[in-house]
Amino acid sequence: MAELVNQQTITRLAAFAGILLVMALWELLAPRRAQAMARPARWPSNLGIAMLDALLTRLLFPITTVGVAIFADNHGLGLLRLLGAPAWVNIACSVVVLDLAIYAQHVVFHSIPALWRLHRMHHTDPELDVTSGARFHPLEILISVALKMGLIVLLGVDAVAVVVFEVLLNATAMFNHGNVRMPGWLDRLARCIVVTPDMHRVHHSIEPSETDSNFGFNLPWWDYAFRTYRAAPAAGHAQMVIGQPMFRGAGEQRLDRLLTQPFRRHAT
Image (cartoon, rainbow, N blue to C red; front, top):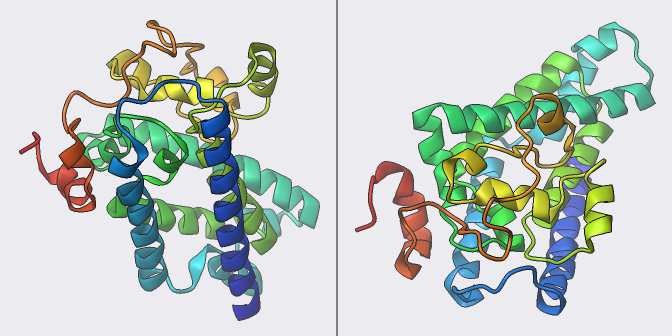
């Protein structure tokens, strides 16, 4: 088990670093929007909170999601194992169901005030780029990991499926938060199978009706099926305002200020 857990950690770190580099270069070469707040005011805190999230998760959940999957396998736990599903069916079903669970969790975090205050920190980034995809409050991450572990046991998710899903989720989160330009025809085609940057950017609008749309991180199908899809922001991608009405100053992008945002109503 230790070897597979270590392989997962190395794979996720390599994927994170590689996609971060690719997306950062893409943003430099073909940006979608002009950004008023420079990277040095935002990137250190966004990347710093990602590292803090990873550290706390490893400390509080030392067995990791892969370890939970191996534990469930060793004890014959989970619906897919009870049904005798072959490995490829387990992997395919697990990735889809886990993605649906992340969509549902995202909707819930927007719907319950106490949870929204945690998730709101992700939305108070006044710009949107590849690092925004890693900007989540540690308490939200810990809740998400706990829920994910429970679902892994309930379903009997294969350990390989967990690795595939985690890498896909991290990769697509960085991709669809990217400040990158895609040809219109390619964006429309890609939206059939993955959440694109133009699709997810709508979700970061300052307009509440647009914030409460396009909840998907990886697969776009749930927004289509549950009528939470919005094709584009009313003001257009170039003119739309990103973020929330509060916590918009450069000082609020410091790491310590991000961590206390859920417990404050206003910038101070």
